[in-house]
Image (cartoon, rainbow, N blue to C red; front, side, top):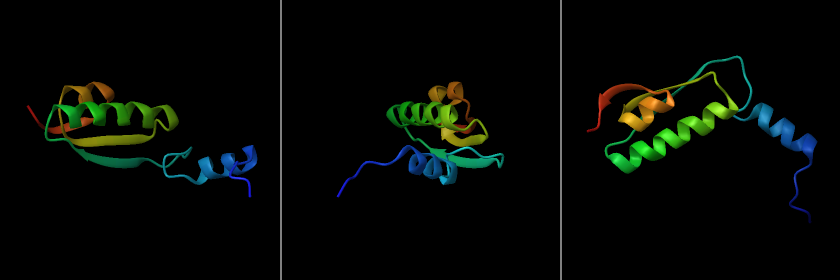
Length: 77
């Protein structure tokens, strides 16, 4: 049994995936209580925006998440 995904199957998966192409705005809450969580949150936001710029991020975080585009509700300094 092959575990390879055909390009057609991959395209269908990406189109249906929550982070895939869509005109619908998605909002994601991230809570990072310390510096490493803020850094991981920032990386996640940047990578998600590479796939879909319609995702809006907000939450508790710091400078890394803010610079990546999240609306920070409370700074986790």
